[in-house]
Length: 309
Ligand code: MLT
Ligand code: MN
Ligand code: ZN
Image (cartoon, rainbow, N blue to C red; front, side, top):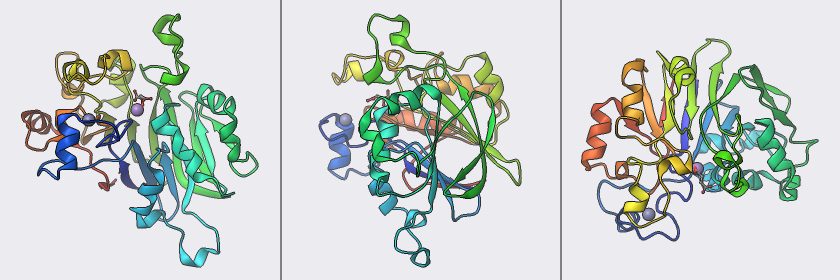
């Protein structure tokens, strides 16, 4: 199974278009140790030819252009794409807006939780993906579903499961508990290669490692995990946005309740941070925070990174 990190940044990417924080200024200036990152997405293939996208970011067009494997092959006719399916972890803008780049009457399958399909269904702009060509398939919790698209079996399966998180920002209800979040608004995905049974986890948004998630991840070969913020308060401290990580539905990397500590006893063979926000000190390769994460066994995701499993 081949896995490519198309985008390792969080919503807004790195640098973010309207941001003058220290990290965004440094990457714009070409400062050593800083690398630009597009928004949150992976691509997976069992045969190296047909690909499943995990999330469709607003930067998808740029990501496809940067990834030769995702270009139409010249022997495939006038209109073609190796992208045969897309699976979504939630309805956030940084994970669904790229679907609009996938118009032009190209068949593929779209997999998402029922509530996310409802949100897409309620927004007429997504009718640009006609359901005859782009069937919308509900991911039911803890069921393993074989991935197919455009009439092909991709040799992959998805097992989706709910993780602690938050409803998409544009659907928040200020008067409801946890802003109207229900189970299934934020998913983790286990992607399984049918032939070998090998699997990995993709969890770009997660508020907490609760008991069930901890048990699920124990001993895993590979986990791509929410690296949005290093510190709970970093956006407030940098004067960027008056929100904590918890308010945004993201666990922090550091601290007693952070992901480094939570993964420590889990014996995960390879763990990679993705969905890294532009405020995060992990974006500076020479920072002490980067060294801390590395010495705890974490890799910091980069665009174009490839993992073979
Ligand atoms: C998030 O990850 O918290 C969201 O992408 C935020 C947003 O929608 O901007
Ligand atoms: Mn996001
Ligand atoms: Zn910034």
